[in-house]
Image (cartoon, rainbow, N blue to C red; front, side, top):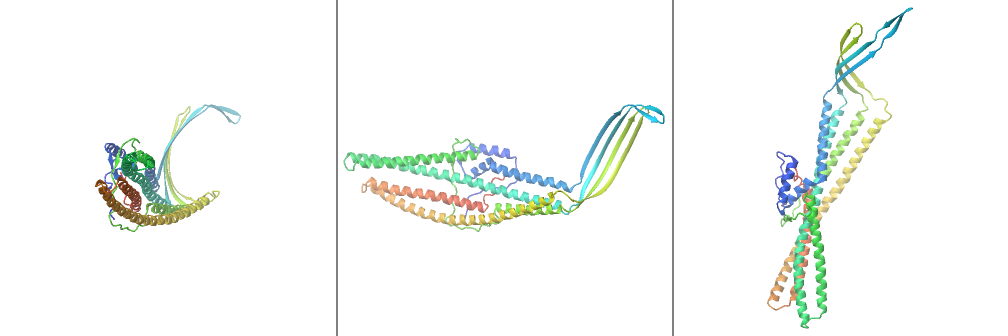
Length: 445
């Protein structure tokens, strides 16, 4: 099945998102006819949930960069300065006492400390793998949000298309009813038809006008909804270009359940949870650290006699960290990580079932809507033939206007059925396209 033209979504050299937004919105505001591709890009640029998912993806990337620092030694610089003064004091030597003058003491030191974890039973590697899984999960979460935003926007888009065509159809029917009301009035004046027929036509015309008002309100509501989603003023006027329909033959490709972004996200979360549980367990095992330092200090005494002392110290040590008693914190942490892993596994299993059912539902609905659309199209063709016959007969004087009006109403009802079936088919077809991942590349600015 041929889908809509998706365009070239290759990333290439990326430009700042602000410049992309400004250039795109200028192009959107300068035209009245908008395609679905333009709407989709504008909606993604303005979507808060999509922006949040993108920020979470960047956060995961930043956390991975932070974790890489654990593979390097930690270097610290320490500087201290102390200045004290001591007043005169009396010192006793046997029976005699000596008055010792006061003094000032200055102590200054600077040093560097280098530490590195030599062996931690692979926990650093597990942390890196866990963060890589989290990062992969955030990438898939971004696609999940993108699909939800696009599906919401597409529903409004098709609703606006259908309402626009339906308003045009109802306006045509209103004109015919007004014409019928005029003819009925003339026939009543001539005594050919009873006066009650005028009330029947008026009642039908009023109901039609109510339907037109409701459909116009829905049309304007859909237009305002789309405008706000695209970051435009809700009063901005624009028209929509039609969405490309599927080809005459419906051929469905199998949808891979495990290839869905939500399943891939949950798989990544489960793998990350398993690694975190392993990390929590291995944290109960002793770790070996290497520490080395260099320190230089100056010591100055200011007394009656000046005195200055300098010294430096270096050292290297190996330390073994053995966790003994922590009031059950590590055990609770390990149990918590195991529970998180189990919850992630249950979430994955639940979503695999749900998405499998969803894929089956969409495929079944798409086949059904395709068949319905084909049938109502054939009905419309038949009613067009009948309407043409009734119109020619009316214009030739062989039939009255009532027969032509009745044929037109059947034709109008058939057109409504086609519009409804077309909207159902487009919405389901787009859902199938999303499941196949054919719109995942749009919005990669």
